[in-house]
Amino acid sequence: MRPMLAGALGALGVMGALLLTGCASSSNSSNSSTKSGLAAQVKQEVTESGEKRVSIQPHRVSCSNGQNGVQSTYQCPLIGADWTSKRSGIARLTVAVPGLAGGEVTGADFHLGASEVVRVKNKSAIQPESKEYPATAFDVPLTFVEKLAYGPRSWVRVYNGDQRFIDANISTGEDTGKAVESLAYFMKSVDETSGRAPSEAAKGGGLFERLGISDEGSSSSKGVEGMHPR
Image (cartoon, rainbow, N blue to C red; front, side, top):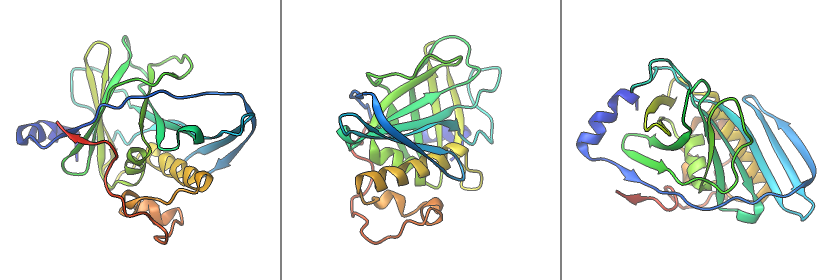
């Protein structure tokens, strides 16, 4: 799915939306480790209270086909994630846009496959530390991150405080952004840390086999938790 097809999808009325809410917790870590992967480094921590944490820094999406909208210069969004055992079914998704002048990232529409759209809008209670570019964290179902990591085609529309937007491919099926591979390694680490079995969302992605995850023990749940039609 390419950004230029967004108008056509709107005309067909093929859209589901999700308003995601919640808050994230934090605590001082007592020990941590970093695992290196092909795409990125996944950080694992155990806090003094025994809470397990997994995180991946934001990385670039594909951005292969440019953007659509009113921006006159090109900015490529970044996506990162973190997870804690205290809220095992929730991940904190960070969306950032280097080079974006003015405003902040206020939300994003993630277009998955041919017709599925997930709207991420409500901020997490814990936000990324101040950076030189806008970055906002949102609480999302862990299964949504899994779908981003393993889905064959996806793109994102990022909104900022001025109600302008940036469109960019995440994965075209032929060109996969570093963010996708990073999220795949993140999900594998979360599954190993929590003992969680990958859902059906993971089976269709090429990275699923690449990361050495077998089908045995996979759950039969499908789709993204909490998704509702608009």
